[in-house]
Image (cartoon, rainbow, N blue to C red):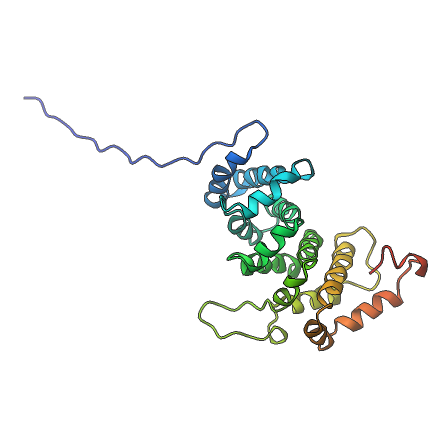
Length: 249
């Protein structure tokens, strides 16, 4: 008498779509975003690199459709990448966000859209860790601050855990204004030129200049040590005054 044995088939685990070897196209974005959100390490970084290539200087025409078309949610996965440990993925994310924050149409969507808090919070996280990528985050925030309608919203960024009561920016160590204050405080007087720290301070001061155009924001800055740090950088500047109008803190 023969005995029949039944073996259960192992459930198939869906695989993420492969990253094409050719130059990325706009129709690749959904697959790339899936890889970014489901994979880690090199695979995720490779997908972020493709997102960056889609909006680099040679593909400026893609920047607005990537954010404003409504066909993709590029910002949420990129915001998640900012929370990762330092590495290629986070660095490439900063580069991509720099490019995507340049068009005027994108600036408003990034700041008032559903990913606003996550994007600003992620950029603040990188700045707070005093990594080499902090200057890229300051550049991105400065790009966003060129739209006047954004500046009041940006400086009010004061994240709290879900379900918690709001905290005024000046009372929250994780707020944008306090993160900028810490950045200027950490940087020694006259940081080495072209270092990540020097560039971070330089772009942070440009961001502060834009944000201070609002009277309400200027009043907030007055209640911090930021004006004092700015005066110190000017006092110890090695650049001749004649160059201050074109390239200075």
